Amino acid sequence: MEDREKKSALETFLFLSGEPITLSAIKDIIELPESEVKRLMEKLMAEYKNRNAGLLIVEIANGYQMVTNPEYADWVRKFRSIHISSKLSVPALETLAIIAYKQPIIRAEIEQLRGVNSDSAIKTLLERRLIKIMGRKEVPGRPFLYGTTREFLQYFGLKDLTGLPTLKDLVRGEAA
Image: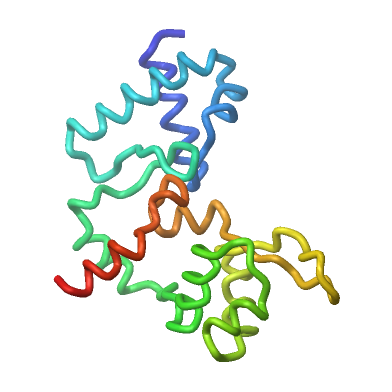
């Protein structure tokens, strides 16, 4: 199989998936060495970027994904405005931020930081698969420990948790 066919196969996997695919998963499907898959993905990513297409292939959440080009964000917003919104409420965003920065964390710790009950926000975040139960804390009552998911990284366009802004970045952003 020549490079063109291999890249077309990779494009197909990315399009069908709708979520990030790891290098090892792609390697298993296409039956090529990981180094070869990485080389082909880099070529494909460059081709999409160079032709300024409506879609791009990016490395995200420890995998590769086909995404819309940010240059066409206005068109995407117009399109999405005619569909049901999937925005998170302020309480859900607050809860998600606490979990992202403090994970693994139990509900009582979240509620102590927020100062209010967080049952509904946690339920919403679990339903949307932005957080998951990572286990139980070894204390009386053995409460659930919560942490973020791959879907969280995907939702916010992060490669990994190191992509989260630091407190210094957030304070600097308010001053600007």
